[in-house]
Image (cartoon, rainbow, N blue to C red; front, side):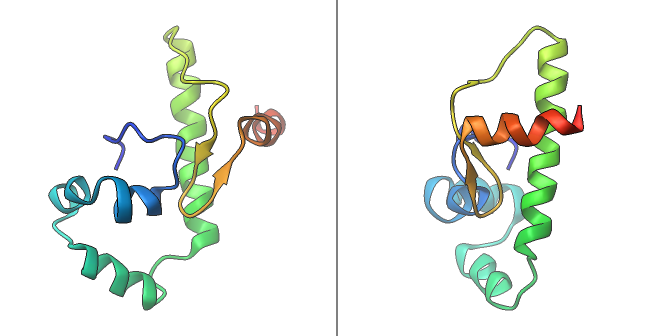
Length: 96
């Protein structure tokens, strides 16, 4: 779901509300399929949030290196939660 422009929204919201057609196109899964997988516990929210956070952290570092900066004052969506821009920066600082 890297193709979405909804960086400030959670991935779960992008899949279920904002870009369901993109999700279907990219994965071949319908909304019902996704909801079934969620209800079966296939997605561990804590691990998914961590993975999305780490992806965005490395994405930001790569873009910054190239002289591009994403909306720095926008919230950052993880899997099923959203961090404020300040919380994202605070969490990011110890990992640099």
